[in-house]
Image (cartoon, rainbow, N blue to C red; front, side):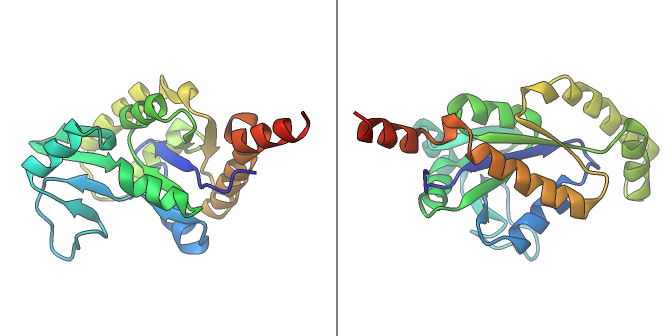
Length: 204
């Protein structure tokens, strides 16, 4: 089997629990590494370069764009954000499965550039649970909750572009299911191409 790690892209509705899922996977399994994004925004209190983000100048970021150095990138509120290709490939070459938590459009960009990426969409069991979780956060106004639900409606149209749908009803079960889905994906023919090529050569 191919010993190189895989790129795992995790998306989901706001309030689906994808952030908690990613933290659990990183903390409980040595095999996973977290992709670190590059940004032109200034570090916030407590943030460290190379941990939360790679903090760079606009010129450095645009140079990386020109060199095709991103798996995906976008501009939000005047600042660039992107997934550096070199860092991801370095971790994968070490055998790490690299997890990238990103929104739907960015995930589909990555799938176009990197077809072997395994895309997981995290969702609660139903829309009412999603609404309750968003309200239960206590950090968002009713208007913001409605905007997030509208955004979820838009994102739901693209759910079938993902490789797996992960229902987060219980976080412990969700973590186990995520690992099972990733393990199953590793056995698919398109992700075992080196093994397939080798055994075909041996059988000649």
